[in-house]
Image (cartoon, rainbow, N blue to C red; front, side):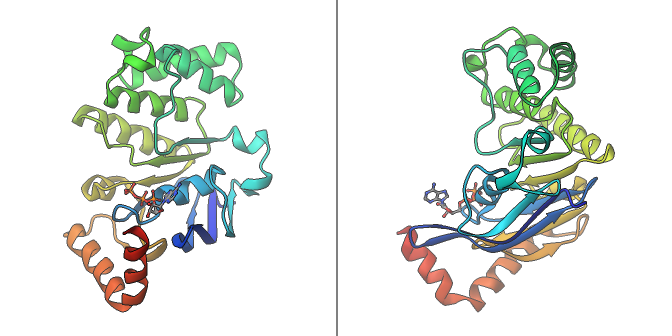
Length: 250
Ligand SMILES: Nc1ncnc2c1ncn2[C@@H]1O[C@H](COP(=O)(O)OP(=O)(O)OP(=O)(O)O)[C@@H](O)[C@H]1O
């Protein structure tokens, strides 16, 4: 069973087609990275996959079920950090992780155990008793990752997870992603850091103007250059679409 499938996805905001026929899959055990310029549609795609935004056309399926019809048995096996890291400002780091794990179906003892283990794993010990509202951006991102992953989901969706992380955090995140895939989870991750993506992804898909415009080979040299060439080639072949998009943004 495919861990994630989105096909023919269209999402419009007024005249803007944020998603314009996007199609992607993630297999169990696969790390699939999506890259694209600001506004390409990565976050919108992820939101549609987890049901945070509706599609005007097309379908998103997670762990075999259409997201619109997914019940707790499916939703409890998802983990995601999209846009803003999860974390109730009034709860402590530890309580946030316990709460997230409980929401994903773990019992009280298992959730407490998962919280301790993820606090250690993401080196959050100094802040374990602090309220989330006082955390630095990078530590909030670590907390969001712990909340998304503490229940060991079968599908992990991470939107630009390296954004605010320091180099130590990036290494910890890399381990989390690799370990999730090794135990069989599918991982969809968006990033602007092509080097990092190239190190861990099995597949890299380029998204532009709300659709897939090509793929890059992990480990290839000169990924940035190839990426920009792909995007420019698409723009050159679709001048009318590009003009319309810019007018909508103006
Ligand atoms: N709620 C919304 N209302 C109006 N327009 C939106 C909304 N959400 C997204 N958009 C637009 O849809 C397009 C795609 O946005 P999206 O956030 O998916 O891009 P992205 O690839 O994640 O970009 P970034 O790399 O900057 O995070 C953008 O033009 C954005 O302005």
